[in-house]
Length: 66
Image (cartoon, rainbow, N blue to C red; front, side, top):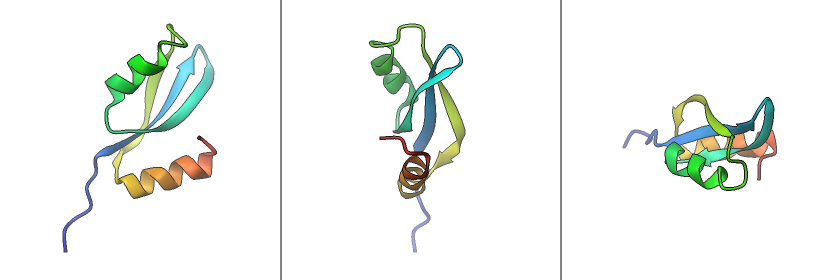
């Protein structure tokens, strides 16, 4: 049986002290640039370690991020 692929990041995008958005991605830098189009001073904070896509989707749903 193949081992699970830990290739997905969980993140929170913050503007100042406020969490503007949370989610999952395979590329933090690309996602940060995309989100900075609406919030130029915002930044991504990685949550935990890389994980499987399945576990990341579960986390995203539990947190209520869309």
